[in-house]
Image 1 (cartoon, rainbow, N blue to C red):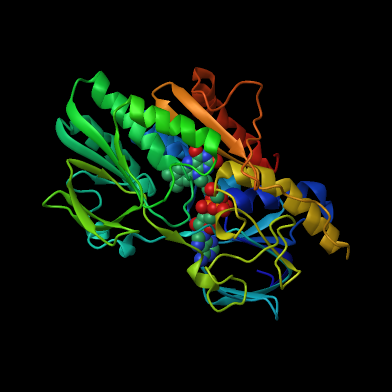
Image 2 (cartoon, rainbow, N blue to C red):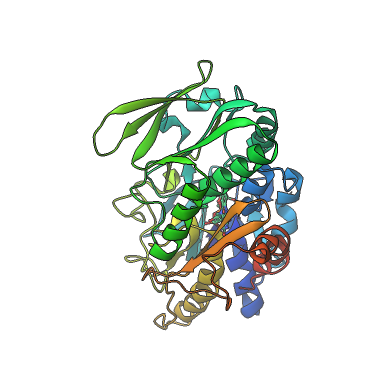
Length: 394
Ligand SMILES: Cc1cc2nc3c(=O)[nH]c(=O)nc-3n(C[C@H](O)[C@H](O)[C@H](O)COP(=O)(O)OP(=O)(O)OC[C@H]3O[C@@H](n4cnc5c(N)ncnc54)[C@H](O)[C@@H]3O)c2cc1C
């Protein structure tokens, strides 16, 4: 393999594959000049995982072999990035060092199950579940089918997360499931966040749903310990410091998350550990040969594939300008999309930008749950993802 590339892309997830595809289709001279560094054998459609957890989609439908999504004209180095030196413009991965003219950082984020005492060893047993790990998503639905009494406890951390509303999807679909199956089960939601949702219009409609369905929910409550065998979850209140033990028959964890470990000490991260880019151009604030998008970046919006879809054409246009020695002029407004199933077959589709003002795509009121939105998420979105977005189309 060559040791220098015009463009190196770190990560072969939603952001890495889609930006590599788009730039290769726009700039033919980049053929064989784009290197994607990605350790995984498979590419995953992660937005499908809550639907696997609720039994609506088969887990296999959410993955494809990585070689099938690597765009033509790009090379793939199957390795973990160990470090980046943005001054020398070098990346070290799997013991090899490669250099670049330009870099896109799209390595996603790290799940931090270790921040919760007992969580890692409890997962996959005693109905301790998560929709955040491919190998565990089937276990969520298996557990749901077998709960007969007690609490299904759904958690959400204070930290920034990807798939920002996946816990809410679990709450409502699981509540619908147990009610339809006439089980003596309560769905309980404990969130470390101070608010239900950051945009008032959607927050109001989610609170209305929680209250209408009699779901026991509390805010500022962070999951700090899982006692799998005892079936107890321990929460700490962010405001009072008090701890509370909640018994469960099933626990659905959204773990805390943080930025890419491999970039620590590289000079690319901000004080919170996310890649430090301009919120509009997505160019690094210090290193103008580096761009970032998606979950790894500090773009101050909700980390979603729907946000990546908006970011990718803007990032690529700005990167092409930089390749032509021009300043980037294309501006991202923070638009993201958060779909929340309120029951099987109904969905609220929150869409908004940095200003937290709804920016809805349809003429319908998207804070009102609709069958159309659910069908769109379940049936249309995967198709648009695999055949549109991953081919660089926004
Ligand atoms: C349960 C769940 C539900 C979600 N629901 C939705 C939804 O309904 N709608 C929506 O739009 N989005 C949803 N998302 C979020 C969406 O999947 C992400 O926001 C999106 O995938 C971000 O793209 P990315 O490229 O930044 O990160 P990713 O797609 O995660 O890709 C990161 C890639 O980097 C690779 N990588 C990691 N470390 C290294 C390393 N050291 N070296 C090289 N490569 C590395 C990884 O293997 C991975 O392939 C959900 C996610 C989850 C998990």
